[in-house]
Amino acid sequence: MIDERVRLYEQSPLLEVAGEAIRPGGLALTDRALEFCALPIGSRVLDVGCGPAASIGHFKVKHQLDAVGLDPSEMLLRSGRRRNLCLPLMQSYGERLPIASEQFDAVLTECSLSVMKDADRALAEFERVLRASGYLILSDVYARNPAGVAALHHLPIDSCLCGACSQAEITDRVVAHGFEIKLWEDHTKALNAFAAQLIWSNGSLQQFWCRATSRANTLDIQTAIARARPGYYLLIAQKISR
Ligand SMILES: C[S@@+](CC[C@H](N)C(=O)[O-])C[C@H]1O[C@@H](n2cnc3c(N)ncnc32)[C@H](O)[C@@H]1O
Image 1 (tube, helix red, strand yellow):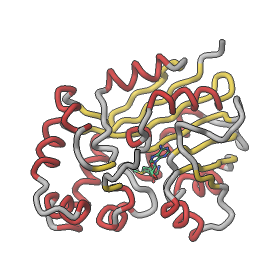
Image 2 (cartoon, protein in one colour; image 1 turned 45 degrees about the vertical axis):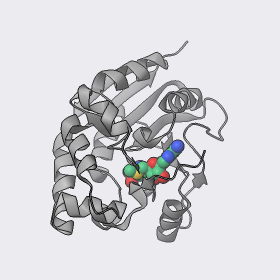
Image 3 (cartoon, helix red, strand yellow; image 1 turned 90 degrees about the vertical axis):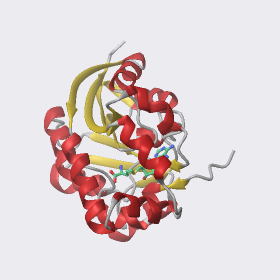
Image 4 (cartoon, protein in one colour; image 1 turned 135 degrees about the horizontal axis):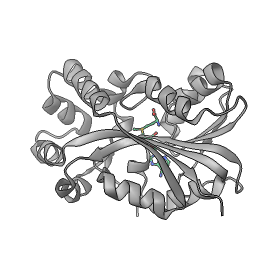
């Protein structure tokens, strides 16, 4: 079935504000994750849902990691290649990684698991391509009010806000797929700063939603989001060696 929903992460009212990384926290949050994992130079890292590949370039230049990016969006991959033709980028889905098993020391997915259609299948794929004790690094939106999750999932937009789950649902899923959680950190301040930038650049959140979705009335979207009390997290887990 073709997904006709507006892909928020490809819309200019968001891209104009986001800069190089289309998510809260920017590369500083990526650095926080790498500091925790302390990966040796040359480690292999896969960025699933890499978008315009800001993190890939950063991994290579600042951290000397052997990083590869994967994303289904032709438009966002093109924008990454425009910045640097040499970036190793693949067009595919997190739920179907075109990669042999046990190839990577870390799999990273920043603000992207929540937009994947089948998060369980994607997590099973992440576990498969990681080496023993490899790191799973997730940063994403979560719902601080679990009672608001169902309404989010019915919204007519393809966005990490609409795919957000509760903390318990995320951690249970990660554990069920063979990982041990090493870190959960709340970074809701970064999400609030991102929302403030959207307001600053569009005049109001309502204007942002109207421009991004081409709809005159976006009250349903704003009400559902406000009820779910969105937050932002960084989760780091390690593959359990069997
Ligand atoms: C909010 S953007 C984040 C992009 C990037 N990680 C960043 O930090 O700038 C979400 C990304 O997930 C990608 N995406 C959507 N569906 C996906 C899927 N099934 N598998 C992998 N990535 C997906 C989108 O194309 C988009 O690039």
